[in-house]
Length: 255
Ligand code: ADP
Ligand code: MG
Image (tube, rainbow, N blue to C red; front, side):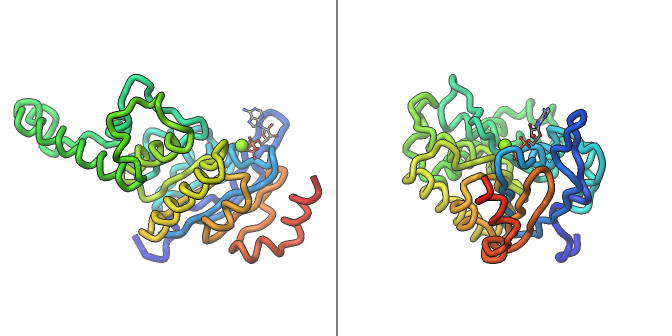
């Protein structure tokens, strides 16, 4: 693909729920290496937009392109192998499994010579299991939680669970990481810790879409920010640009 091609493109996307227009003719792009924020007051249409990008819902009209491919109607499970990964607002990790095993679940099983041949080669399977554990450990170290690898999920704080969910999402080696309200419910120290983690990923050039209502958090974390209100895009620009946009100020201060 051409280097100047956007990674993600929403083209006049609308989503209706009956008579209500949750997302109204919204367009924006994410360039390779860009961290894009999506903010707006309650009911602005952020979660619905996120669901349209991840494939959880379909637009009523408009188009969505990811890496030059039209994905408008593609279900979520076909978007992840293309390089999309997401975290969940309410962290969905498996209670019965260890922290390490939860991260391993994010790894795609790789059977380069076909499933059957791999199954016939037990040595290779053992190697794959070891490699999978090593990769999951690397990811846990990256999010600063290697010392929790053997712990069960129940023993962790919400802030730690968010980081493990990010490690699980990174295990799939995505080109676009999408985070749904990553700072929700976190205390100040946990939020700072999360912010540092996202800054590291940003420095490594990972493209991200962050949906948040914590405006201070998003100002720090993003290159550009889309602001929504009542389903429409009211601004799209750098943190400096959107913070002096009168429409943005009105949408936040007006309520
Ligand atoms: P945000 O995440 O910015 O708070 P949402 O995308 O959740 O906003 O919601 C946008 C609008 O769409 C709201 O008015 C909400 O009530 C409505 N909405 C969201 N999901 C549904 C649904 N499944 N059915 C009907 N209305 C919905
Ligand atoms: Mg929401």
